[in-house]
Length: 364
Ligand SMILES: Cc1cc2nc3c(=O)[nH]c(=O)nc-3n(C[C@H](O)[C@H](O)[C@H](O)COP(=O)(O)OP(=O)(O)OC[C@H]3O[C@@H](n4cnc5c(N)ncnc54)[C@H](O)[C@@H]3O)c2cc1C
Image (tube, rainbow, N blue to C red; front, side, top):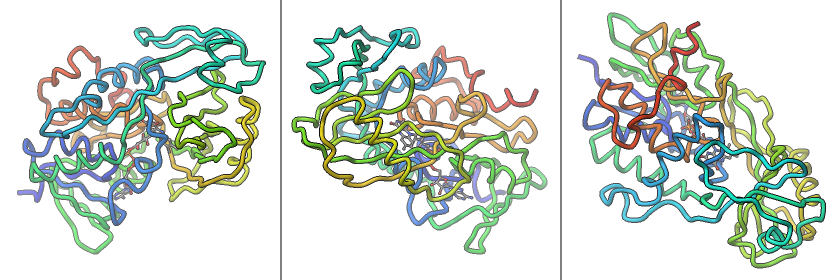
């Protein structure tokens, strides 16, 4: 018998949430290359839940995840993970069209000035999406890992998968510490490394592309910013949200092709972010308090990929979570779990069509 029923490669939010869903029903282990889980995309996000983000298919997963994030079951967490701040979508032209069902209302210039004081005159109108919220990502990720352990899931940090061999219905995974482990099913939850892990297992990569995104924490000459809404533009060239009384988190909305790596911010992207910011509000920029970058990974159609590989029914994809892997985690992990274990869908995802997310969509 194999050591485990399921071996999950990657301990970010994707691997942790799927692990928490299936442990207790299948003997499951997570192997994580780094010394602790959450070092890559999961630990570097902008930490918001924005229902309109990521297109109509993703919006369905985000909406289905909302109530769990706001009021999780007591045994999962004593407190919720969301703090509502609202989002303001600016435009120089037409108001953006949001996916159907997303609550929003237009703002005139006066309302806009009340929400974003000091906004420059060329931004004449905007759309308010009141449901946008911050997510406590560290607490959510920790709660998933805790649940996974509670259900007797095993976590091995410092265990990079070097090679996977599928023989006589069993995976043999060779790890960076020289040890090996066997499992009936291997789950690829390796984020930016998803294609590399597929290759290491002799499975055809699906073309999951890693793209760098930069974040900057700026101190500015304006106070009262902690509850500032998330402010973005419909052309997708920046976003920022309040962080401290006089500081914000800002991104130039960059999406730069990258090999999988420990991503770091480039000076040019930080400068671009500040330049774009200065065209939005008249607040003096005082200092870059810190900056960081992470890799968001996308399939060609920008939907996430859940399901068994079309060429190997023992290789399961849980990848391509783009810029929405945190806000979709509750529903996405339940969807992935029902596909993996071939069980009835949980009520949270009842009625969600899995087809836009299946790995088999790439078999044609
Ligand atoms: C700047 C930025 C802002 C973002 N903002 C948001 C946001 O506001 N809201 C939102 O919902 N999402 C956001 N995202 C996206 C979100 O962070 C990701 O979708 C999500 O974290 C992906 O999770 P993951 O587990 O797939 O990847 P990761 O967290 O990267 O985890 C993958 C893990 O696999 C491990 N691994 C790789 N190869 C191997 C191997 N061979 N063996 C063992 N382990 C391996 C890695 O070490 C890593 O820990 C943002 C991302 C970035 C970068």
